[in-house]
Amino acid sequence: MQCLSVGTESPVSSIMDSWSPQALVQKSQEARNLAYCPYSKFRVGAAVLTSDGSVFTGCNVENACYTAGLCAERTAISKAVSEGHTAFKAIAIASDLEDRFISPCGACRQFMREFGSQWEVYLSKSDGSYKLMTVEELLPCSFGPDDLRARPKNH
Ligand SMILES: [Zn+2]
Image (tube, rainbow, N blue to C red; front, side, top):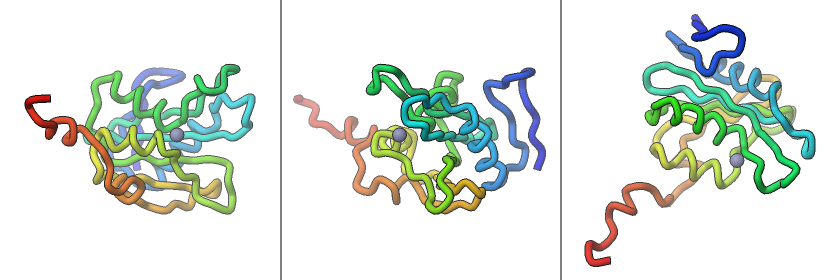
């Protein structure tokens, strides 16, 4: 696997010429290490892989006004979308949990689903082991962009 960083000290994104789940999980672990979580002390990181091979990472960003905080998954996806990427292959999620796979919250599942239901989600443990699920498996019978397009024309 070859990772080429774009930028210098703190790249916004990087390119994975040939990616592997392990490498994406590692990226999510690196993002986890940057988590801003002074209140929960629960570090989470995410790394999203775009269809062109770019990787965007994110961590949870908490706030003294608790409800203003943001999850790692939505941070990573928002970074990608704001850089012009809306086609995703996979996302890896990391935490410090040793005995269970970190699982995205409901809001993040819906956020992922906006960009398709058939892409891959790697839920990992702190040792780097992972479980693969699809967005569809995490959020079955979901509501998405197509549902809005299907609304009656008279309403
Ligand atoms: Zn979330």
